Length: 240
Image (cartoon, rainbow, N blue to C red):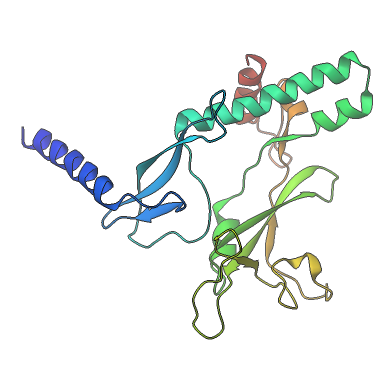
C-alpha cells in the first residue's frame, strides 16, 4: 500500500512539475531537479494537412543531475520505430522501381544505403573526454573501403570572447564548432594544415540495405561469429 501511494504521489509531482515548468516551444529540453530530465519529445508524426509533428514533454531518467549540452530531438518509441520503417520502405520502393527500369547504377546506389551504424562507447567517451567538448558531430562519408559511413568528431559551444556566453545563429540555436577547426571556421572542412590530426572515429562497417536483403549471414571479420543483429534485422525488413 505504501509503495502504491508513493507511486501515485510521484506521478502527481511529475504532472505538477510539467504544468509549472513547461518550456517555450522553441526549447529542446528542460532540466529537472532530481533523477529526470523533461525533454520536448516528438510523440506523433505530421498528419495529412499538417506540416508540424505533435510534441509533449516526457521524463527521461538520468544517471546524474548535470544538464545535457548540445542539440537533439528525442522521439517516443512509437515515432522512432515509425520513422525507421518509413525510411526502409522508401528504400525498398526505390529499389523495386530501379530494378523494374533495369537501372543498375541506381540499384547499386540504393543497396549501398546505410540502415544502421554502431559506435562503441570507448570511441564516444574518448571524443567526449576532450577539453571543452560539449557534444559530437557526425559527418556522412565514404570510408577507406568505399562504403557509405559516418565519422564522429567532437564539437564545442562557440562562446563570446568577452562574456563567455554561448553564441547563437540567426535561427536562435547555439553555435557548435568542430574541435580542431581552423581560422574561426565552425567545421574542419576548411582546415589547411592536414598534418595536425583531430580526434575522430569512423563507425564502420555500417549495415547497408543489401546485407539485410541477402539474409543477414554477416560474419565478424576477426572471430567468424554470426551477427545476430543483422539476422534479426533481415527478417524484420523483409516483412515490412
